[in-house]
Structures are given as structure tokens and as C-alpha cells.
Image (cartoon, rainbow, N blue to C red):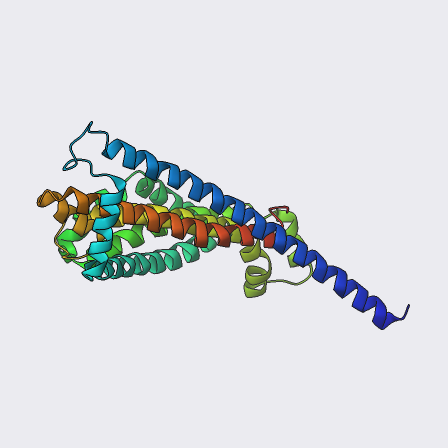
Length: 282
């Protein structure tokens, strides 16, 4: 066998291996999606049966089908898409600001013990303060506005991502770092080739955790009213006018959107990342 044929054979085996791993990952994702759909369908049936059982009046607990109908009506009016757009804008802005700041600070903390010694006490303090308790303080500076919600979300996201990124960097085996330095890796090369890949799985996990926390804080902040739009604001409006169908339609929308984002985007990204860097075996 010639050298060229050997290389082609090796490349073919590598491609086949990648294909098998991709197929296994796709099957795992389909099984996970099926489990999610099955559980949600069961919950929907239970909701419908309880809503029609008469234990609670429909004005207090409407059946699932009526909540879905109200959600469809909300969407046809165009208000749902407007509210969804504003909520996603606030969430995305808070996630981008907080993730950028948290990733940078966490990497620096993991790289520099001096910075770590200064920042860790502040992190301990901030971790003990619920971010929704920070929101009224931010309101004093920016009023009931988009900025107040965005900066509150950014605060929570930054804290969460900082801790995960710092943990990821500290968990990089010292043997790898010392080996890279022995081979002449310094500064940016050491950061991009060793530290970041080694910490990436923890960083992605931090993003996923930060999203779930920011989603809850976003809804709580919008429920306080004053911003005039958003899914949480519309739920609060339904409560004020005793429109239980609107309230449950909003809660249903929040749940479905959260599950879709977590299952179809964040979890897939996390699994692909940890498998890429050898922390998950197919």
C-alpha cells in the first residue's frame, strides 16, 4: 500500500468515526426530545382534566385548551409578538453584557492569583444577594425602564458566568499548562490554546445556568410593571383585570419558550462542547 493510499485510509476511518459520533449524538438528542414532549403532553392532559373537573371555577383555573385559545388570540392581535420581542431584547442584552464581563473576569481570576484574592470576597458578597433584590436599587438610578431590567440581568449573568469560568480555568490540569509553557507557550498563545479550551465546558455550563436564572429574573422584573410591554408585564395586566386565561396563557408561553431554548439550543451546545473537548464519551 502506498503512502497516499495509507493517508486516504486513515482519513476515511477518521471521517467514519466522526459520522458515527454525530449519529449517536443525534439519536441521544432525539430520545431526549421525545422524553420532553411525552412529559409535557402528560402535563397538558392533566391540566385539561383538572380544569374541567370543577374543583376550581374556570375563572380561577381555565382548562389547557382555553389557555391555548387565549394564547392564539393574543398572537393574532399582534400583542404577543410585540411582548415577546421586548422580553427577548431585554434578555439578550443582559446576557451579552453579563456573559462578556463574566467570561473576561473569570479568565483573569483563574490566570492571576492576585486578582483572584481581590475579587473572591466581592463574589461571596454578591452571591448572597438575590438579584431581584438588586432591581429596586437599580430602579433608583434608571427608573422603571429597560435599562434597569437589562443591568439587573447583566449583574446576575456576570456573577454566574464569572464563577463558572473561574472554576473552569482552575480545573485545567497543571500538567497541561506546564507542558505548554515548556514548549514555549506564553501569554495569548497559552490562553487560546490551553486555558480557554480546558475551561470551555465549564463556561458553556455557566451560560446555560445564567440563561435560566436571567429568564426568571426578567419575568419577575416585568411583573413589577412600569415598562409597558413584555410577557411578564402582560401576565401582570391579566391579573389586574382578573383575566385568568391571559395569565395562564402567559405562563404557558414562558414555559414553552424556556424549554425550547434550554433543550434545543443551550443543552445541544453544551453537549457538543464537552464532547468536542473529550469530557463526554459517546
